[in-house]
Amino acid sequence: EAQVTQNPRYLITVTGKKLTVTCSQNMNHEYMSWYRQDPGLGLRQIYYSMNVEVTDKGDVPEGYKVSRKEKRNFPLILESPSPNQTSLYFCASSLTGEGYGYTFGSGTRLTVV
Amino acid sequence: AQSVTQPDIHITVSEGASLELRCNYSYGATPYLFWYVQSPGQGLQLLLKYFSGDTLVQGIKGFEAEFKRSQSSFNLRKPSVHWSDAAEYFCAVASRGGYNKLIFGAGTRLAVHP
Image 1 (cartoon, each protein chain N blue to C red):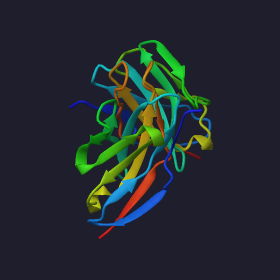
Image 2 (tube, each protein chain N blue to C red; image 1 turned 180 degrees about the vertical axis):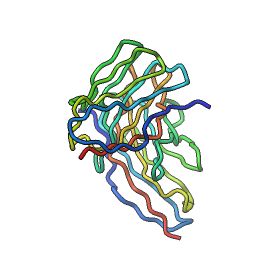
Image 3 (cartoon, one colour; image 1 turned 90 degrees about the vertical axis):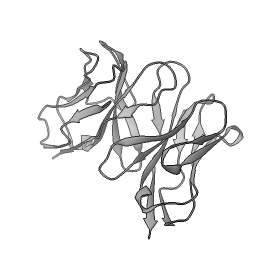
Image 4 (cartoon, one colour; image 1 turned 60 degrees about the vertical axis):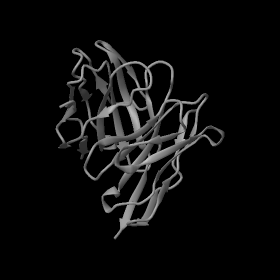
C-alpha cells in the first residue's frame, strides 16, 4: 500500500531534550515536506526537500532541522525543543513536477513541557 | 503575498442538508487548487483538485468544487451531507511553476446534526 509513515504518533517530551520524528514513504516520491498544524492557522510548511541531499526552508523553519540522505526518508529533528513547538506535525510526499498533490502521513502530536 | 482564506471557522448543518464551504485565494496567477479533509485523529485526505479545464471538479465522497477565476474562489459543495462528513476541511493552493509547495487555509470545522 502506498503510504507515508510517521513515527511516533504521539510524543511528550521536556524542554531541551533532542528528539527526532521519522518519516518514510514507499512511493519513490522525489518531493517531501514537513508541516505543522496549529488551531486557526492551518498547516504551515517547515522544511521541504526536492531530492536526496537537497533541502530548503519553508515558512516556519526556526528550531527545526531535516536531512535527506535517502530518497524514502525525511526525518524532522528538534535539537532543543521548546513549548512553542507543541503542535501536530505532518510529513508529506509528492511524486514530482507540477500539480501533483501531496500524500500525507497520519501525523505526530508533539507536546513539549 | 500568496494566501488562502476560508471565511468560516465553524459550520453546522443538519444531516441531509446541502453544504457549501468557501475558499478564496490570493495569488499572482491561477494556481493549482485542492480540498483536503481531516477526520478526527487522522491525517489529510485529498478530496479533489483543479488543474485546468472544466471548472466544476468532481471528487470523492460525493463532493464537488467550482473554480471561479473572476472571484478567485474554489468553493466546495455537497448536495446532501452525511453524519460521517463531520471533519475539518482545508482548502490549499500550489504554484504552477517549480515544486508544488502547498499553501493552506486555516480550515473549516464541519459539525453535522442528526
